[in-house]
Length: 157
Image 1 (spheres, rainbow, N blue to C red):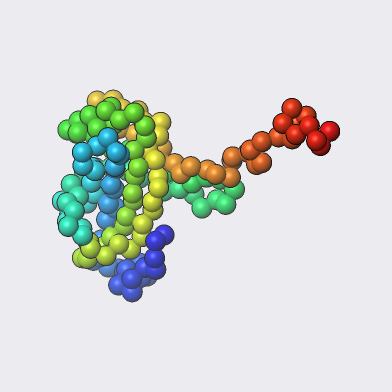
Image 2 (tube, one colour):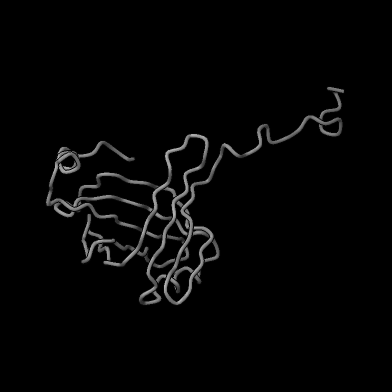
């Protein structure tokens, strides 16, 4: 998470009943895209910090908080106007995905931000576009990168 949650958001979360709604803002970007795709799960378009987020049905399964595993989320977007399929087809590598959570009452205040996700393993059909949201796992990289062999380090042997 990028920063502490606002007092208003904390009160809404802890209240027995609230009229406050939380929205998920998704930004898909790539160097090959002219403009990022910005969508929200709310029923209507939202402007946040000067950017228009188009209402678009999607499901987002957030990653587990498991220290021994790389965070991986799942994104399923309804393929209602083929805009996302066209964008994904044109890319040669995985796009970046920024996930932000805002309150509908104050969409310019980001309550939580999840950065550096890449949309991988993308599949699509007439109804859905789906893929995994992954973060590069640097802990899986071999260390040290090289090995001490007689060919590389003859003085050791």
